Image (cartoon, rainbow, N blue to C red; front, side):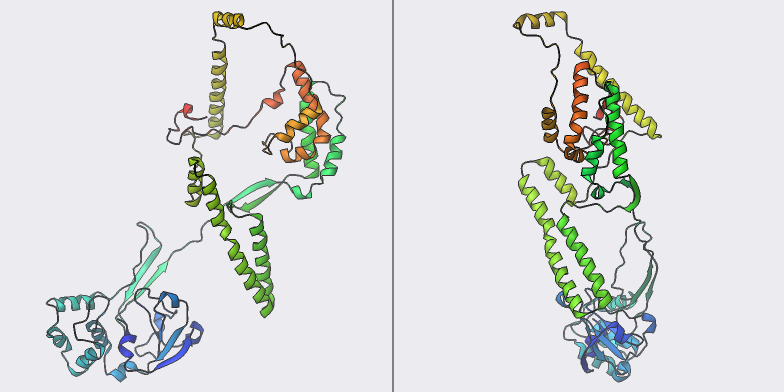
Length: 466
């Protein structure tokens, strides 16, 4: 029950819109629907006992955000011949947020009783339809301060402090003043290394590969070293490695290249219309903004298609669910104080694992081997590997996917584009390895990322990792 509801019968409504700019510096009161308490911003320090204007705000969800109507209130209390306290009690009697009105008591009846009787409270209590506990409830409503706005924060949070509830002004609603200690979320930054692949001239890169002298190298280890070092040097020459610090913005899978292009175009149009402020530029920006909003349905379509196409794959469905709920499985490792010690521990673990597998291969008894040999028919012996051709190597490379490892001298996608120039070098490496039955030590290195076999396993046990 607000002051406007009481005063509508005694004042004339002015049908004009109101904004914060219009009411800035003026004395005005604000009333709003109790369920939302939406109001135009007015400093409570500027409110006076007798307001010159009241602002009636929209009371339905569809009207929220519209301008309020100004209602002129020329010395309302003097006109009604009421004090602030009597007006507040009259609002309570006519029905407020804390208690219903007495049957038969409307706004006009409550005003008449309050104006004609000094002990108007006793009159309210003596009415035939007044509840037996009316006096108690009435006093509770008076003492409660009529604070309807709740300030809810997490337990232990210091988000809100300095809460002060001011006594009701000329309405039955109190003003709640508080300070917020909000902080801007910390931005995650990371220094990354990158190469400007768009500036790479693939034709020049191929020509540089042709200049590599592979004829003078006959040792497999030296040839492997030449392959790695020469390609790394050429890559550094044509597209040098750079570093920069970036703000981490996780890229959504549904945000494709088309959306990125349209988003940039939207920002460009926004900058243009803000500089010119011309109607034509504003129109173009609004049209493109609407078009970009329609494109965002790509997100819904992406996840819908992914769920429908993988309806029988629980692994993929749970991955989609984790994406939608922003749940990420963080890598878990055994407790450690030093990263080097953890790395060495895993290295020793995997070496022991390989040694165990190799030792089990030699446990076969002689009898089993003899029985196997006697059961086999006489066949030709496999004494050496045949040399491979460049055509065979090319087919193998083209059938592989474009995944790359940090140990690769150049990325796989670039390797495929330079196959004609690299085939002699790669083929010679493979044939020497088959002829000597030897794998260069340089090619025996790898990057390992230990992961738990099952998320329910303990991280304290090494055997839980694979």
